[in-house]
Length: 204
Image 1 (cartoon, one colour):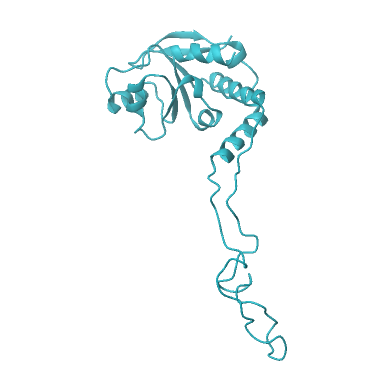
Image 2: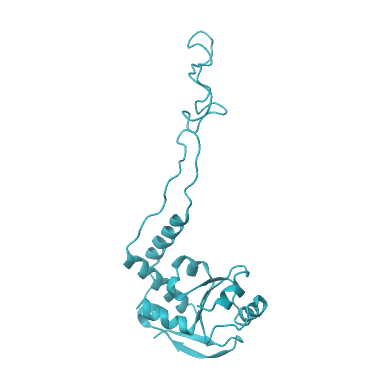
């Protein structure tokens, strides 16, 4: 059964905690993780890119010179793609890049990245991850104590969320909204002990 180090808010290791085998102990499937990350990035796209085709650029209604006898190549419009200020050949237009994946695929990818973090020793569980006041310096001190830099912090404590939101590279999320991309993108995964119970209950 996989285990993770248990810390207190002072950043001192106070023991170990056993993790669920079905969530944190599976063989990671990197192909599924790749599919889910690609899906996440596609769904994040605004899809607002737009350019003008030759039909949409203003001007170019008159034939620039007669068809034959000038020595020039024949031209029908000054807004053809080969002209300066001409239209774009296959101009991008606003569109929706999002697509859906099967729920089982997303669930497997999440278990894969959680298992990979646990196996590499980059999963930290904190007993009572909370703060009495909103203080970025205090939370930064905790991160320094556990030697975490680019981290995902899983907690429901509002004071922790507000204290961490101005620290570069640190992402906070509640237990029911953790996503594969954030975990893959982070060096450490820091989970509140209460949030760990929620994860094991929801994703079992």
